[in-house]
Image 1: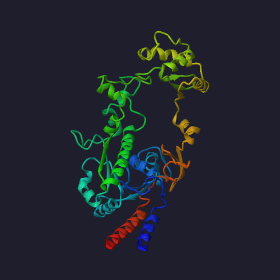
Image 2 (image 1 turned 180 degrees about the vertical axis):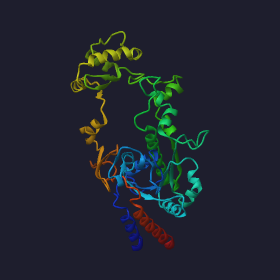
Image 3 (image 1 turned 60 degrees about the vertical axis):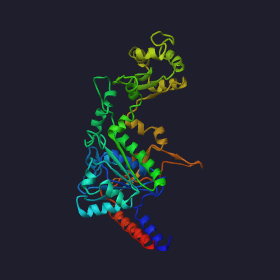
Image 4 (image 1 turned 90 degrees about the vertical axis):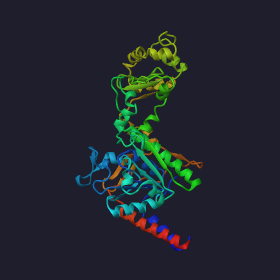
Length: 421
């Protein structure tokens, strides 16, 4: 590397806007064209592992989730949506109007200098913007593209828009969730979006590994439908192998008992008795004989689970959860309280796992965010969650100037390399 090239690399590094350069993916640039949740969650996962994530937003309000609320926080003229804050940490924001020639020209430059492009447009939108797959490959043959759709990019309903609750219903998840078969219930977080983002990030890392051998990128595709079907687990094979259609059964497990939620005096407790050995310990704690004919083996307990639940609830009704949990733990019975969100984030165990991040937001000041769920331990005993430092979600267009300066430096470096070659 000559002095000119080294200087350009240093200039490009300085234009990272103060972002940390560490983590397993710190040599990668991710271009995030997505909005809402599935794509942004995938890009955030890559950013958590050190990738530089540049989020492209439209100048008219930016990502849709910037307007999803309440709740909003901050001053009226600079308010932020807590929804947006949940899925955009460790990113830079640049505003581009992709309907203009200048906006598309800048996007083309970003594509040339990126390793990964994340998009969750409806099928055909990128083509209409002038960036079909052939053009992406021409601009950057090494580019890995993550494309997330609602129901798949092809097939009889391939162009259908995807919203999480609709996908939860269409993909069967709501039919398995709720107090009973006549009350299908959505899961309390947009799980289809989140799972699609997770599967997408997993596919991206696989494609990047393959690129080390082939030198070429590829398109990684997933959808909300695919992601939810991908976690049907035993409910899927119950149908595909045994022909049984699962239905919502509340909080009592359909194949293992006692396993479910029961009411104490002051809270709801969950118990998982996963073997006959554990049943022998648990039964006397709720006033039942181990060899009671109704509950002698797991198959009997599943058939009679309503009667068993009634007996357990009666035994727990006068007990406080803080007294009962230690007794169950001493007997080796897996159990836990049903916590509200505030009790989760105030819990010492949650804090001990690095699941809270204190970051400095450019307009909100110091804020606390939920943190990455992965920690990486080194052979030297060190432990981190992917990067030395995490950054707050950006304000709209916060890094437009610095990203443009970085592109200028990268273009100059590429031109110098071509001339030298």
